[in-house]
Image (cartoon, rainbow, N blue to C red):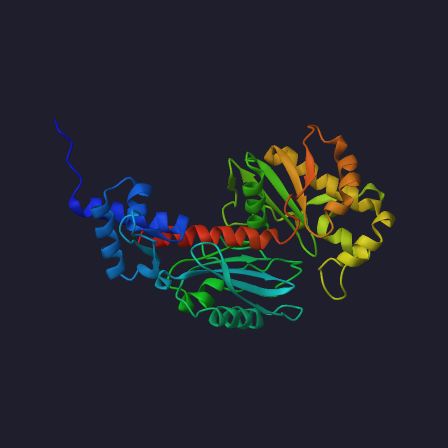
Length: 362
C-alpha cells in the first residue's frame, strides 16, 4: 500500500522553515546559495523567498553578487527582516536588573540596567524590570528569558520568598510584568539553574553533576541526564537549610553558620563576601560545612562531579575537598569553567534558542 504523499502546503511549510534556518545560520544568502544549502531547486528556493518576503520575514538586503563576464547572472542577497523580532535576556540579582536585547543571530544589540535598593522590595524590582524591558522594546520582542536570584515556582514563574532569603523580600511575578511587552513566551528560572546549564554547554560531555553556588546567597542546581531537576514546585537545590557540621562539631543549618561566624551583612541574611574572603583562614568551619553539603549531594544525587561556582566557593576549594574526604564515595570537585557571568550566559543561550525556534516555525 502506497504511503500518502505530503500535501503541497506541508511541503511549502517545510521548505520555508529550511530557508529561515539557513538564513539564521548564514545571515545572508542568494536564492542560488539557498538552493545549494538546502538541497532544493533554484525555482523552489525563489518561491520560498517570495512567500517569506510577503509575510515580512525575509527582505532583500540591497546587496548584489558581482555577476557578468562569465560569472553568471547577478544575484540578490536575502536576509531575515528586522520584523522577525528579538529576544530579551534578563537577570535579577542583588547587583541590579540587567537586560539585553538579542537578535536572531545571537548578537547583543542593546543593553539596559537598573540598580536595586536593599532590601529588595517586589514593587521596586517590578518597576526596574518594566523599565529595562520598555527601554529595549524598539524592535518586536518575541520571547523573554529571566534568571532570578530567588527560588522560582516552576508552574507560574513567580519568585518565591523563603525564610532567610538574602535578596527579595516578598514575591514577584516577572511573567505578569513582562507579558504586556513580549509577544511570545516568558520563561523564568532560578539563577543557579541557568549557570548550571551554561556550565553543561561549555563542558561537552558533562551530563550528571551538581552545581554549587556560594556567594551572597547559597544555591545548588542538580543536572541529571543533561536536564535540570526542579522538583515538584521548583525548589530542588535550596541548600541553605541543610544541617551541616558547625563550630564544635554540633549540627547547624548552613545559612545560620554565617551569622554565628559574623559573616553576614547588617540586618540581612546575605553573606558578606568581602569579609569572608579576607578572613577565610580564620574560619575553618566554613570548609567543613561546605564539605558536609557536598557529602549530602553525593549521597542523594549521585553526580558525575561537583562544580563549585560563585564569588567565594572556588577560593576555598582546596580546603573544601579535604573536608569532604570522609564522604563514602570519591567524586571530582572542581571550580566552575565559566567564572564570569555564568547566569547571563545561560539566560542568553536559552533566549536565543527559543527565539530561533519561534522564527523558524512562524
